[in-house]
Length: 363
Image 1: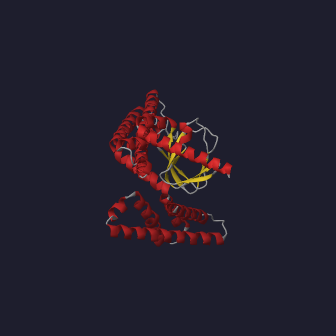
Image 2: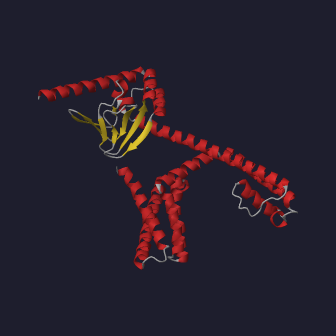
Image 3: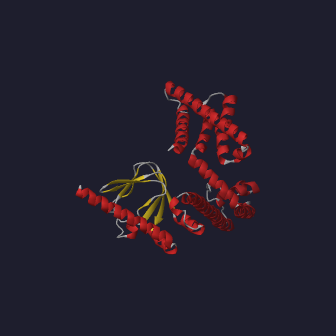
């Protein structure tokens, strides 16, 4: 739970800052609201300055100052402080200067994570992206030259110069033409059609490269996280490294808040769960059973009739690893030792539950 506090803290501070910035731009707002908003903005800025200086001191002492400054988080911290502080020193406290506080959005964890992922994808796909960018500029230049030759006599104001033709080529190639310059000759319209198709092809290539890169990088990061979680589960200690790698590829991570129903009794089960962090409570007839990190549940439905035999609820924020039924059967077929362990544990649990139920009846 403590690890989530910084996330909520940043979210709260950024939200207060952005709302205050918006309120400060409302000229018809009451003076009290404007004064309160300005004070809130100064408080948020002071917090970000203290945080940034603290990180700089820590990075300098640990010898990671340059790495921190180059990181996405370090850049977001600097942008949250330096531009706004400089604007306030030069222009004073004015609504215009406070508009720079919009950079605080970059401090949100999802934004930082997204920028980090984008930076990684661009670095890995730099050659492919550069090749498509080169193709874009080649099409752009030749389209401008050709339309200049085709339309300069008909429309000298729009196409009489190469810069004017380049402007038309940009708006047409990006399919955002404003309609202020439209070819009138047949050849010019043919060129315009080819340029539009070329623009769709170029941006389709860019989108495909970035989408593929994002998917590959997301899978890599998810695999690394799953590997770390799987390797920390005691139940998997006996598995060979190759089996752990395979299992890490199959498992899906699920972060759940406290007091959330994971599975419900009587429902059809299609997966089992391993607890990487946190704890859950299994509600059975003879009394609740608590399970912690390293335990698993939900296997009874996969080994039996497919119907859940108990309701399971998280008792604290938990990280679960999900193994689907098809992956469960394929993996246990290739790793019989794990299958025997799961079946043995399921048998013990079934025996304990039956013994507790008989004891309860006898009592």
